[in-house]
Length: 389
Image (cartoon, rainbow, N blue to C red; front, side, top):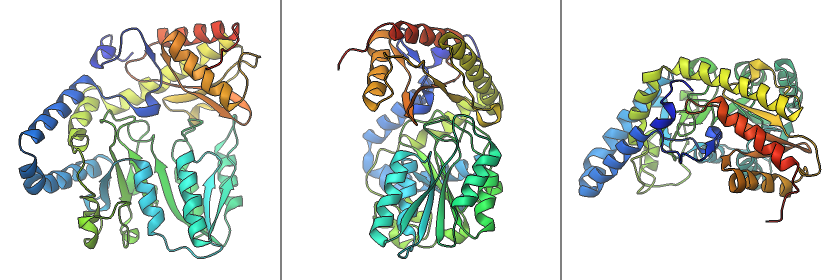
């Protein structure tokens, strides 16, 4: 815990253990209060805000986001989430039959589905590059990408931090491998802002899409889309509305009537992070999740083989192999549900390559007691057959 009172800054039920910050993020109380005030102000006079203030505030807020991540304001649009932004990019592409979209074996499921759907519509196809797990290396990741690229590859979709396995990939080097072959790169940065250092100008990607509601304490439903100035033509939001005759990013400012209180809370969330220091928070989370991993692997007599240089504030720990933990989707679902129903622990269970894992996150409201309770609960469950749901 960064400070003794850190948990008190959030609205958690005092009886629960929450080690899933990477799932949906958590907004601190002060950000919730600010958002509620914005909603109340909006409800006092909706039309004047939407007619006279909304666009100017949207532009000012995205400029603040751009400055935060070393980008130009004219290259950033505020969006609902990564899936929203990536769909917009995929639909802006001109694909021909037999063109290829490169994804990896760890591409987020919803994004992989979207890529395959777009490919089917155009006669293109999706090629998957395997990322080794559970003991990957930077060199293996780069070789996998290089091997999967072909003269037909038009786009590579690369994760900055993988969702399922929590790996911090060597994104700068992976982008360079693609650029050396003339392949455009779209980076899924869903877990990156607030989790790892992020300098958009230095990455040399073509597009970068990220969430602010995961590791940056912004209310859910808030992210951004960055597009290199050479990749902005024909880039439209997934929902076409009044702004589509304007150039990027103005085409994204209005996609229908939505609650603006999430993105209006970005400044308050940034101030919350700055009070602790972003670098300090990241270092705290990394150190805590590594200590938690050591505790869990010892308690369960397993090994976490993920190298330290590919770990940030989240990691996968394998569950013990036993009859109580069947390595199936049904088993995965039952374990996750039982952790909540019987032990009041929020922690996702993952099934990857016929092995079950627990994905644990570390955030400033967590301490080692949380992971000790998780370790004990799994050991209790191991001795008890899972009941049907």
